[in-house]
Every structure is written in C-alpha cells, then in structure tokens.
Figure 1 (cartoon, helix red, strand yellow):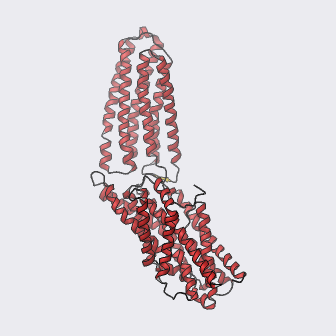
Figure 2 (tube, rainbow over the protein chains, first blue to last red):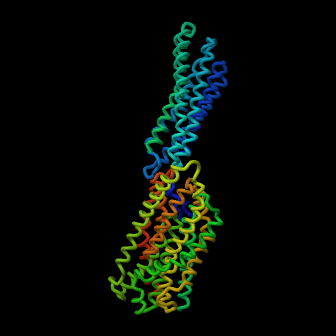
Figure 3 (tube, rainbow over the protein chains, first blue to last red):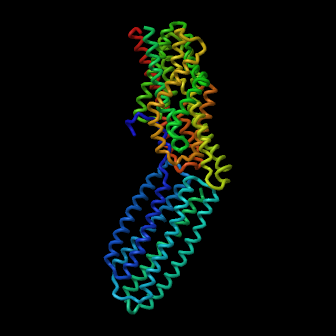
Length: 230
Length: 341
C-alpha cells in the first residue's frame, strides 16, 4: 500500500479465517467424492480411471494444504478472533485428515489388482465408499451453515439449529461401521482364494475408506468445541 | 509583507483542511460505505453537510484551545504581533509537512497531534529566544491534551465493546431472522453524527493557528468569527470530495465483514467520544478513536478478526508526531525570523 497518498484504518481488520475454513472443508468433500468414484472404478477393474482419480485426489490434497497454511499464517498473536485459535487449529487439523485419508486410500488401491472377486466384496466396497461419501457430504453441510454464523456471531439458537446436523453425521458413520464389519467378515470368508496378501490388502482398504467417515465425526466434534467454547 | 503572510497562512490552512477531509474524514465515512448502508455519493453529500455544521456550530472550543490554550498568544502578540503570525505559519507548515510525509508512508498519524506539536514548537522557540518564560506555556493544558490521546481511543474501545454487547444481547440474540437490515437506517444517522463530531474537533487543526494569527493582527477580535469556521469546513469538504472518495472506496471495498450492527456500534462509539472531547475543548484524533472502537467491537467478538498490531503503529505515530512537528515548526519559525520576515 506504500506510495499511495492514503492513511486508512484498514489494518485493524485482520484476515478472517472462516471463509478459508469452509474452502478447506469443500476440499474434503471433493476428495470424498473422488474417492468414491475411484473405488467404483477399481472394483470394475478400470485401473486407468483409478490412476487418473488418484492424481486428482493428490492435487486436491495439495490445494487443501495450501489453504491450511494460509489459515495458520493468518493466526499471528496480534490477531484476535471470536473463537479460541487453539480450538480453531485443532479443528483444522482434524478436517485436514479427511483429505489425507482419501489420498492414502486411493494410493493403497493402486498397489494391487484383482482378477476375480466374490460378489459380496465387489459390491460391498462401492457401498462402503458411497456411504462414506455421504457422511462427509453431510458433514460439509454443517460447515456451510456454521462458518457464516460464527463469522457474524449470530444467535445461539441459530448455532444450536446448525448443530442438529451432528447426530445425522454420527448416524451415517454408524452405517459405515456396519458395512465395514460385514465386509471384513466376507473378506475372511474368502481368505483361501484371496491368499494372505489379498486379505491384508483388502482389510487395510476397508480401514482406510472408513477412516474418512471417522474423521468427519471427529471434525464435527472439534468444530462444536470451537464454536461452543467461545 | 503582511498581505503575503496572510495569503501564506490561508493557503497553509487550506492545505491542512484538505488533508483532514481527504484522509481523516474519509476514514470515518468509509466504514459506512463498507457496510453497504449508503452509496459513495450519498456519503459524500451527508459528510459535507454535517462536517460543515459540526465545524461551524461546535468547532469553537477546540479551535480556541489550539489558538490560545497552549501558547500565550496574547502575551506574545502584545510584544510583537508579527511573531505570532510567523509562528503560526511555521506551526501549520510543520504539521502539514509531517502529515504529508506520514500519509505517503501510510502511517496512521493524527493531524490534531501534528498541529498541537507545531504550536508547541513555536511556543518553545519564543521561550528559547527569551521572549516569554518557559513557564508561560500552558503545561497543564498540554498535559491534558496528551493524556486525552491515550485515554480517548481506550474510551472508544470500551464504548464500542459495550454498545455491541448490548446490541447482541438485546437484539441479535433475541430476534428471529435477519435483524441487520434494521441497522442500515441507524447507520445513516451515525454517519451524520460522526461527520458532525469530526467537524467539531478536527476543524481546529486547520483554523486554530490561523485564528491566532488573525487575532494578533487585529483582523478578528477575541471571539473567532463564524466565517473562519465556514472556510475551514469548506476546505475539509473539498478534501473529501477531491481525494477522500478514493480513501472511502479503498476502505469500503476491503471492510466487507463489517455488518451494519457492528458498523453502527463502532461509529456511534467514535462519534460520541469525539464529540465529548470537542465539548471539553481537547483536540484528539478521530482516526485513533475509530481504531479503538473497532477493536472494542472486535474484542466483543463482533468481528471475525481484528489485528491488534496496528496499536503499536498508532503508539509509534504518537510518540514521533509531536516532537517532529515541534522541531520542524521551531526550525521554520527561527528560519523565517532569521531571514528577517
């Protein structure tokens, strides 16, 4: 700004981190969608599409990291926010894990190909990925509602209304858990055909996909802590 | 010679008034445009009217403080009226130079501080020359002024905080639906209020020194006539209309998070504190009080983010402004006197 003949009070207004937080959550949602597509492609044997989606998820993760760094940089000691910056960073860390988990799961699929799989497994995984995506999307609607409310310090009632989404995220995550257990059972039933490495690989994949839903729940918790303990 | 001095004083005063309108008033009004309560054109028209009214009807007290409250102008004038004329020209030139330099570097300096520094510099030089004793400078008033520079932004902060907490508790948290829209017409009122308050305090920086010089020359009597306030007000409005709109635009485009209820809180607090100081005859910085009020609203969790590092910049600008303006003023005064003007 130097060089302009102006004296302004602009500097007193810091860069609010809430809009970037929403952008960051959007990356998580995008990553969950792409992972869902990647799982569908993988169990149809379409390794080419899987690879393309892997690259895309990787890029999404990089973008999310960039936003995360921007938010961290905006939280210097002189900046005062309507929330505790420690809670904000805890929340951001949790939310960031969603994208990271999506990337890990996508890469994990690239490590191994399957010729033939039992129908329960072949259909179970897409079901798991789809439910996971649904959980993350539900979580995103919470963020969409809340970031504006926090920024404008709206009424407690409105914030309470927004948090009614949390039990829905929890419920979806339970469904993800249920699908996980069933898939695990089917994988062990097929252990002869799959061999040790196959069992290991698929079990780990179940974990990795389900992780996204777990992280959506823990992000929602961290968000609640941030907003309620203002 | 006298004609040239009068012309020089008039030009220097106009330049100060222009600067005040171009930057300080623009800052105060920019927050109104930022919340979208009023268009730029309407803000300028309202600001012009109320700045003018504030200057003409409520500007006398602070102007008198600057003109005669710090340096015993009547005493110096009774020895040699020319000293007052040259001294006040030096004071206003020094203040103008410093404000110009600081503005180029975007430092949040205050025109009031600079003018007080300039006048003080003149007082110190006449005492250095042995014309008046050092004790003739009104140190208690000087102390009150400097103290008010520390206290007034804090008052703005406390008031801004309180008003916003009240609004939040009584209105925002109780109401169903969006109540921000009800603050838009209120903001139009506070915009007028802040312009009026600004005019009542800041016009003194431009016309205080001129009034002192004119009194010494016998152009005006002991009572400062209205036409001087009219000229001061016109200069400020000119600054706003020819340059201030750019500053208003800059602020308006960047402060998007200031909703009408927050804007109202900060402006109402600022205007009230400024007007209080006009009433108790103390020249303060509207801009610093505005910063204090915005921080107050921010600390009441009314803003999504406030950056407190600007406080250090303001404190730095205080500490530097008075000595720099005083020394520059003294040098100009001694220089003008030295060449025999």
